[in-house]
Amino acid sequence: MIEKDYEMIVKIFEDYSSSYNVLHHQVEEVENETIIWSNSYLEIYPYQYELNQLPKPKIYKKEPKSKEGIIVNKLKNNELYFSYNAENKGWGSSFIINETEKKICLRFRSNRAGEMVLSQVYYIIYEGSVIEKRLFYTRDDDTNEETFMVDRYSYNDNSTVHTIIRDGFFGEKIKILSTRTFRFEYVNGDVLIYSKQLKKNLKVVEDLLYTSRKAKKNKQ
Image (cartoon, rainbow, N blue to C red; front, side, top):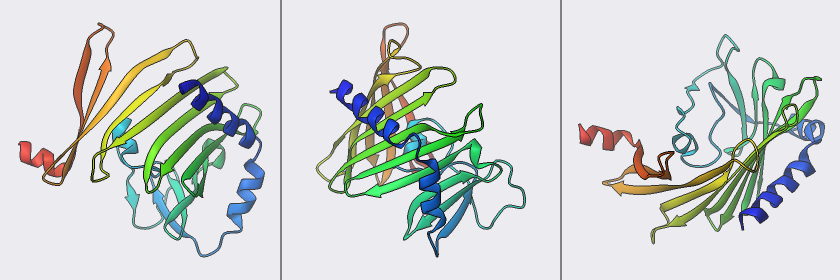
C-alpha cells in the first residue's frame, strides 16, 4: 500500500516538475483575488503546523513595510491558490490546485542554476468532506535526497479525527521512519493531540503533542 502511494506521488511530482511557467501564467490571470500576508505559508490541511510541531503563521492586517520573511498568499472565493516569498519567488512559490475530492500543493524553488524546479508536493485525498489520506514528497536533485510520508486518517462517528497514522522515509528509501500515531481527544470543545512512536531506546512512548488554548487554561 505504501509503495503504491509512493509511486503515485512520484508520478505527480514528475508530471508537474517542469510546469512552473505554465502555472505562474495561470495565477497571474486571476482577477479580484484576496491577498493575505503572513510570516510562513498558510496551512493547507487542518492542524498542519501542530502535527509538525511548528508555530502557526502570523497573519498581518495590512502589507508589511519590509518584505523580509514575508509570504504573500492569494485566495479566490476563500480558497488559497498561490503563495510566494515576498523577497524572492525563487526562495519558495506554492501553487494549490483544488479539485473534486483532492488537493495538490506544488512548491517550487530556484536551484543552483537559477531554474525554478519543483521541490515539494502535498497530495490530499478526500472522502466526501473529510481527508482520507495525505501524501507528502520532497526531492532535492542537487543533493540526491528524497523524503516521503503518508498520513492515513480515521474518524469518530461525528466525523472528528480519531487517529492519523504516519509512515514513510527520510532522506533516502533505506531510512525508514518508525510508524507514528497521532491520537486526538476532545474535551469540552478543546482539542488534545498525542503522538506515539517507537523511540531509539526501542520503547514506544506516547507524548502530548498539542493542547488547544482553552485546554491549556483548564489544566493550569
